[in-house]
Length: 334
Image (cartoon, rainbow, N blue to C red; front, top):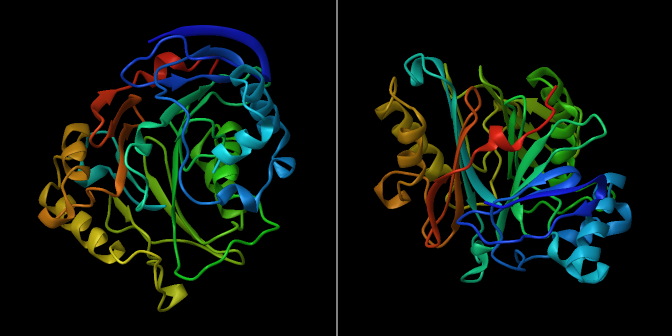
């Protein structure tokens, strides 16, 4: 792992100096530390079109400007880099046998070109403006993210929901909202309020966690619900709304219902003994064997323990499970 020091402004971005098994790319207005970048790449789709760079929040504009300056890529190319059927689970209390809460997260992107999943980063920010130090799992060159962690042991992730939904063009990308929530939240109460107060550009299912509990929010562009837990000490979400308030809804994923049922079954089979090692096995279990893992569609797997900052990441067919020292990468936490 390489370590770089950069001036403390959001515009400055470090360059990767040497490749490591997993590259944590520190960009920010801060001291930077890094661990993995495989090279330039992007996810398919035109998500950036909903929010061109001129509509980005100021801190993210500075970051993209800094990446453009240090990489030599034009701003137009940087915009094309920034762009999700996914599964997530939080277990605590009776499901961990009194052990710490554990979160599992699979990122599914069906149709991603072969090899594109190598271009993923853990981007660590240590801002000097009073914001919370944060880490985000993201594509190289992207400032948006659908999975994030901060130095107070908070975690956030989101899954797309509701078939046939079109982006609300005037709204901010939810994957740009999420990093802002994490920069600004020192506790789960604040993070929950941030999520509940937002009406995303597309329907989303959002999981937020601290070391004590997980909460699932179901959001549309006009309303939201704090979804009931799957069970006492368990929250599982895929791409279907589960709160009865919504009535009959159709997810945007044909596998959502089966993944949900598989994850409930696995959690119940392992009730009382779920820890990070067990969660890794559960999230790696293929759908055909009763799990959520989708060979060819799952591009990343993550496991996080907020109480200890134990954090594991795997990229199928590229990088086996590797532990990332998140706590050591965060600085000046408040």
